[in-house]
Structure formats: structure tokens, C-alpha cells
Image (cartoon, rainbow, N blue to C red; front, top):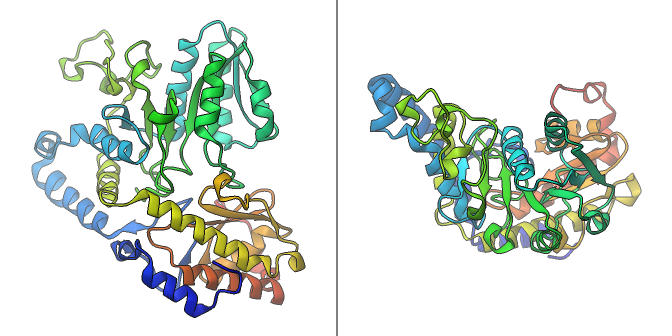
Length: 415
């Protein structure tokens, strides 16, 4: 792609796009250029019918029998297997449950227990806040001198990996600026120092190929509602390297993590496999939606997804380059695709108001405090022509100062 790409060029790229047929599998509202799939994925059409069937037939007619007849009871494992195929994880190493925050609590507690005698949790100051909050809480709960130590830049991390570090806890793709870590290199670097590694894949799973097994990762977590399109607040997932399976207990010892939950034994006996990482009863309607959304990925070529993601991001950056300096937009996402996820972010003054003006014009992105406007590139349903059009609308809003209208200054509860 070149910065001088025309509308016809973009339309031709859409016509020859090997992923173009997937767009028809989503419900996308007319008049909306959706560049926020990195925050909430669009609705796959078959999810609507699947959830309706679950409500009307399985719940409505079969009632409690559906735990067996519709196999509700094994939804966490079934969805986990589908996700495992996207993140390079072996069978039986991924389960779907709870939220990313809760799953991080489980795996971080387990990792610290597996690495006694060390006290530091290494992460980044710019990591997603919930990861840092959970780490702070786990360190305080465990005591014994455990503490969270934060880097100010990715380049600082190697020097922080010392003999007192127990766990390296990183998000593969940064939520704010889209920076992507070298998973394999950092995992090896940490392992060479006896440090266990946890990867947060919230902005990775479904956006690019991942190889947890090849990288040797110890644990991973991720959400289901971004690129995986599982729905708002969809169940999250977690990965445990098979070499760690059964050698410890995760702290949330709920009944679904018991080796035989329906024996109703008053004493907890954890499962020896990935099911130990379950806790309470799975939310069936959310799990069903997630299960159906994951079926969409059965025949997706993740190499093609990544290739299109790179081109979509490059196109948007090149289009915005023509006016960024004039209006004070600073690209904070790496230009180098090897160091970038599937989003493009800019820092700017009046970012919140600018994003609200964009949304009012049908370009849906989001804002991250204090000054970041963020655009997610979702290859399964975003067109090249839409990316070019979104950049043109952004330019018009800046040129006309449309963002300065009073209605765009009022902060919503969610930004």
C-alpha cells in the first residue's frame, strides 16, 4: 500500500482480499465504520440464532436436563479447545472461565507458588491496569516480601530479570500504544534466569498467529470479547503449560475445579488437569455465545489475518501521515509491523472530544486516557476502503474543528 492509494485502489484490494467472505458472517450496522473491534468485536450472525435456541429450546424446554443433553457442563473445555487452536496451545491446556482479572489471579498465584524463594513480579508501568491491580493484590495477600516491580520502557525489561524475580508478567500487545513484545525471546530470557512467564493475550488472540507451545510460555490469559467476537463481557480463557499441570493448587478452589464435582465430597480434591482452573458454575448463555463465535474460526487462515492486519494498519498510518503534523497527532504505535499489534494509536490534545466527533460521524474507535485516540483493525470484517474513508473523516473533523462542539466535551462513563 502507498500513501497515494486511491478509492479505486482500495476497492480493488477489498475485491481481491482472501478474507472478504468473512465479513458477511457478521451483523454490521449500516453507516458505521467500525474500528473498535480491539475493544468489542462485532456480532457473528450465527450467535443470535444459537443463543435464541439455547434460551427457547435448551433452557425453555429441556430445563435442567440440558446440562447433559446439550452438554452445557463441558462448555468451558469445548470453547477452550477452539481457542487453543488459535494460540498455539496443545489439547487440554486451555480452559474458558471467568474474566481475565480472575484468571490472572489464579495463574499468578500458582506461578509464585511454583517459584518459592523469589519475591519480585516484573511487569510494565504501561500494562493494562487490571493486570497491575491483580498483581498488587496477590503480592499483598501472599506477603513474604512479594512485590510488583515495573519497567518504564520495554528496553528496561532484560536488566530487571535477576535472581530475585519470580514471575515476568507481560501483555503481548500493549492496549494503549499497540507495541508488541517478542514473546519467544523474552520467555527464553526469563527462563534462562529461572523466571516463570505469564502472557496476557487480550490484544493478540484472533488478531495474529500465536505459538505458546513454541515459545515455551508457562501461563497465558486472554479475553473473549475483542478479536474473538464472543460478546460484551464474554468469558475469558487461560492456558497452563502441561509441564505445570497438577503440581500445585490455584487458590480459587470452587466445585468445578474438583476432580469429581458431582460426588459432593466435603473436602476439596483438585482435578489434576486444566479443569483445576475452573471455579464456579459456568454462565451458560455467555458460554454458548462464545462457543458459537469461536466456530467462525474453524477455517480461518491466521497468516492471512496477520497479513491483512499489517496492511490495514500501514494504510491508516500512511493516510493520517498527510495531515498528522498539521493537527498535532503523534503516532505512538510502532511503524515497524514486527513490533506492532493490530491497532493504530495517536496522542493528541482534545482526544476525547475528537473521538466523540468521529463516532457521531460513524467512525467508531475509542479513547484511552490521558490523550490517546485508538483505532482497531479487525481483518475479518474491516475493508481497506473503510480505513481510507475513516482517515478522511478524521481529517475533516480536525480541519473544521467539529470536535469543539459542546456535546463532544461531556465524558461518558465508558471511553
